[in-house]
Length: 354
Image 1 (tube, rainbow, N blue to C red):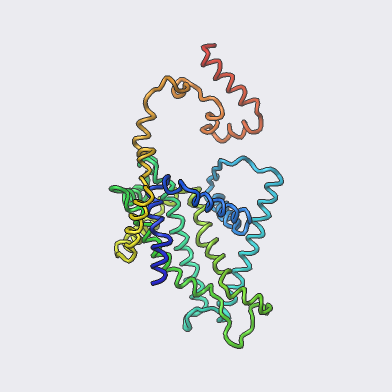
Image 2: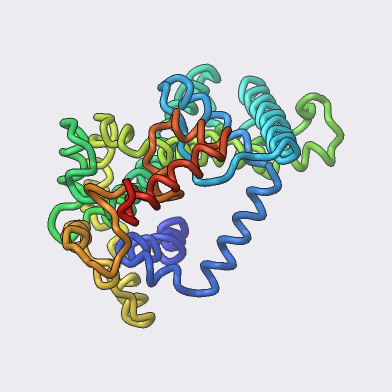
């Protein structure tokens, strides 16, 4: 009962409004403070090992991760990779403590469940939770795109048609069902990651009692699930959202989540979201930016007051470089004179020179 109450009041109502009214939802100092707090935690590097998973997936898929950030300096690179390594070391230690406790019978896992079976189910459920975390990132990444830009594979189309049909209520509906599915998985995961020393039992790795008390808090298990079952999947989904949509498991999980939402267990979240929307005056994003189709139509007309761009006109740097082939981008970074030459051609054409 407490979990359902906390989910609806402290999470789901905000997710329902945030999924449809993104611009109004972030237009306050609370979101700004939350953002900077999150950035401070990220800067600490405690969770940086999740970036390594993103790089691994990128290497396996052969797709380069696009970033708008400038290249790191040598000092920035050293600091970044140091945080990745120490975060990885902490994660490995957390796994060591958790798995040793599991196989020594020092967790809250139900008696009668073999340790090897509990470990297998543990990793499967973390993958399920991770998939759900990645799905929400992928869905938000394509939410404001035109249907033609959301991919053309069978499951990309099926997923998007189900998710965005009608007035788009299936997106917040997915968020509600997703939370119920995550909570269901966490009941078992928490049993594995919660360390509990039997009366008279020895401490894990024979650590002092004070350290063992720290192990018993469950923070090590929380760190494992945060990195392995959440952030790593979110980073991968943010880099490859269309790949997530093309996965048939995504469509299956979407159906399951909508089924959970249809059960009505957390329908109170819709009521709380409606009250919050009315009190704060939230409006849907389309009120401010229009639909993807409306934005596409607005870009078709010629406006003589705007810079000369389009057919017959070269886009002047830096806009030209944003859409240039990767090999040309690399050349522009290595030799600035190439950019100056392209801009000189632009100036000559626009001034009418041959």
